Length: 329
Image (cartoon, rainbow, N blue to C red; front, side, top):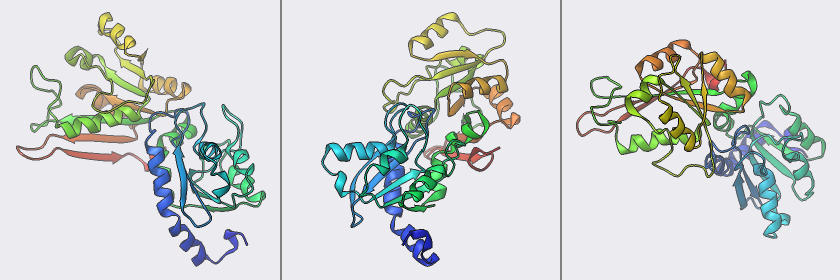
């Protein structure tokens, strides 16, 4: 009997039973946040007939196997493919050809897989329920909605991009004890080491950085990920708000040598459209007070991160606000 035909209480109990595996799948996906664009971050965990973990994987990079296909590929190499009865996946499997074959096809190649547990549906119009339908029509038991809000939050940047054609915009600002964004003379920051690591995590998950000429002229920033390992081979766009072209050529050349793809943005809308067309999922705005205020007032952002320097002996405070649910317009 298919799970969808069981009493609601039985379905709810089954969903709770799969929550630990789904959390593992979310953790597997989070390892590659910022590495998968234009694809979403996805994690998958394979379970045996007794519900024990066989292995798991996260989608690592566009053009490589998606998470569920990666799990099956690894299981085959390790001689464990016949042990898999259930796949727990953060996102609905795709059912269309892209740079890789459909994940539903990869799953259906293995008749011992009886059940697929899904966190949330794919917001991509090319998928949006069709992957689930294909699995069900083939006799696979499908349970969907396990830790749905957490899984949807994981792909919020991807959801924004496929719905609007524009990337998810995160604003980041740091304020000292006096409420200023300007570091002391001779320094580039006033926040704690923990806050620095967090700020570089934001860079790591982003596909683009957006800044203004004032920030470049004042701080000569690098905009690289330094306080933690970056994704190997990751290249980012660097968008510049610089109508008067004040940024020195030497700094631009240095940024290009670091791997940035430079682009002047005449307006916010023009820059967002450019990034969307280039498959960017998330752009991080790192700027001074003038550009930050303009971005905030524009209403074009999705997430605001404010780091407030702690008082003497106190930790910094980090405040995160979302303009709208999951970045939806």
